[in-house]
Length: 366
Image (tube, rainbow, N blue to C red; front, side):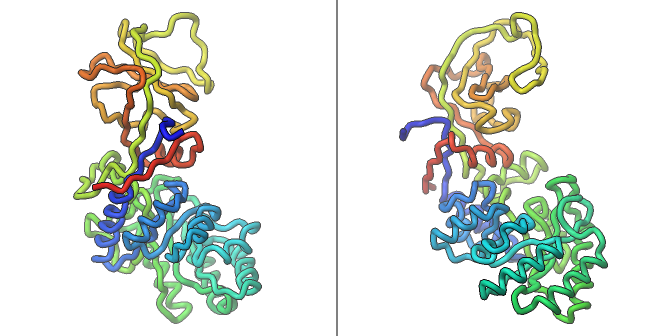
């Protein structure tokens, strides 16, 4: 099934280039990079390319992905991004050297598991600075927990540092003032434990904008970056940041045409809801030339986030397994069997990488 579609073409050479550029740009500000592989479903070639690009850590929110990287023999330290479940702490200390944490019960379980495994596990304690996902809201409590790890769990747990997440749930912007709040928390922890923390992790790709702007607060020395390495087009598409030598084609979606026909632009008959219980809005433009592609919601989630490389087509919608395009105004003539290519943003790519119905093809080209 070598010619199966849809397929995702992944350029490992361009991925290594992007990783190296992000790593070097951050290093100039004294910042290390955890290369986040969850956006590529933890695929080992992607992890290897990020490691080759100089990432200090490889990170994912899924222990299965980290286990796959370790089994492949990649020796870059592994970081668990999602706060560990109690049910996985024994496996976690065997697989990952580092984890993000925000609960004392989990930390105590990690302490016990690491001791039983004869290992030292490194923990980064998370602060909630307003995005309202994981992290300590009460900073006095956070300092106390850091002190407990330092003073009573140090045989098995190393208090590696503190961190924050912004933008993933609450859409809070990683402003210099917001990231300075994390530095201030880190200084409180350091004063309490009497030493410097190794890691002050200031967020994900959204915080990379502060590096590009040159206004990231002094004291932030780590970022957890996946999106900007995998799909730097996102900062261009969402925030207007230029690519500046980064490749925007690490991932290319290819789909095959299965029908080309002139049809009305407005459905004919009594209208109800679509397959997902929604009531789409249709615009009557008369008879239009339409192309049907053999992929759908099941593969990429939201058709509105697909970016056709042919700028003269319009994606009208999708069902589970079909995507409908209007190609009336395109200079290209479409035929059944043709391949249509799309650029991607992070959310769409996330679904495609995790879909077993999408073939993954790795290339290593200039």
